[in-house]
Length: 104
Image 1 (tube, rainbow, N blue to C red):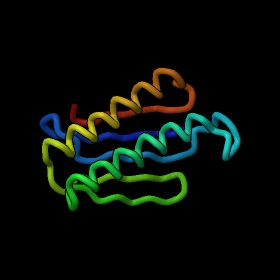
Image 2 (cartoon, helix red, strand yellow; image 1 turned 60 degrees about the horizontal axis):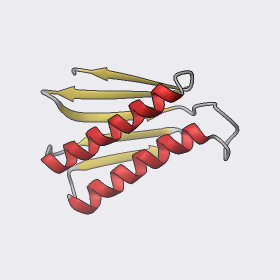
Image 3 (spheres, helix red, strand yellow; image 1 turned 90 degrees about the horizontal axis):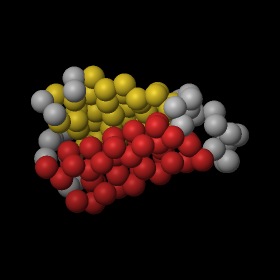
Image 4 (cartoon, helix red, strand yellow; image 1 turned 180 degrees about the horizontal axis):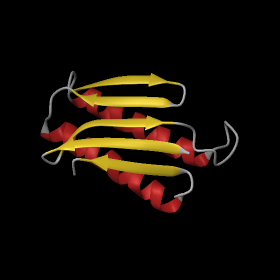
C-alpha cells in the first residue's frame, strides 16, 4: 500500500510525503503506482518551471517528499491540485492508497 501524508497549516500545504509501493500489480504493470508517480512528478515539474526555489524534493525508490520552502499562490494551487488528483486515485483504489491529512 502507498501511504500519503499531507501536512497543512492555515490551509496551505507544508509538505507531501508519498511512500511505499501500491501492490496493485507487479513493477512495470502497476497502474495505480504509475498514476500516483506521474501526478506527483508532473506537479513538481510544473511548480519548478513556474517558480524556482519554492519547493525542495527528495526522491528515492518508493519514496517522495515535497517540502514547501516558500508559500505562493501558484505553488499552493498546484500542490492542492496534486492532492485532489491523489484523492481521486484513492477513491478508485482504496485498498492500495491511503491519504492522511494533518492540520486541515
